[in-house]
Image (cartoon, rainbow over all chains, first blue to last red; front, top):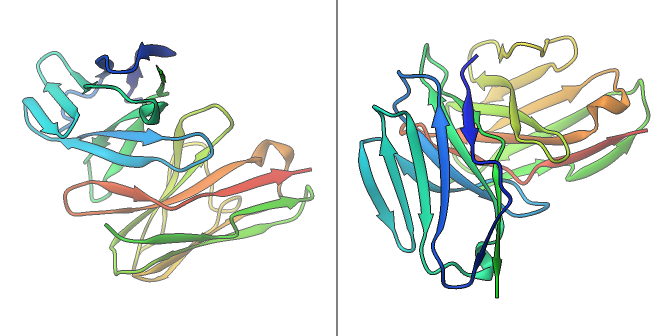
Length: 113
Length: 113
């Protein structure tokens, strides 16, 4: 059973701080990694995709991937109260013809004004 | 990204009955997926529904309980059969892209009494 583990949280940061969310995965073959944001009562929203080792930046969000260590992280700079949500890490299993996502349990982030 | 709608958005059903959930996409997609998210939990993949082939079910999910149809490239249905209170959950459809990203519909909140 392929596993995706996230820091359990909840994570609370003050407004303007950097929020750091971490994720490890068990499948060494995995090649595609995603971060979703889920507001309470809403469906998950894709915010970052990363496929290669290193950093990928998109606005205030930076995803970091280290395949050798099997971890992927998400940094949120200048955190805002509107960033308060559950963040889900997802890893693709590209075996066969169906691209299945395995999700972590999520980390609840609260940004305090 | 594609616009995805689901019907119904929520329903309350009696045990022993069945509910069919519809997922409509505004563009043609090859890969569609059905997930379940139980209260306070992460997402669990039920099955992959690719047009032109039988749905592929994950361990713990069977066709008799969760029959799926995929008649064309923009539409799919998931039926929850012979429901019990344990089936109370949010059911989500998603669509996959060639870059392995998945985008989710708004979800169907099901309560079984």
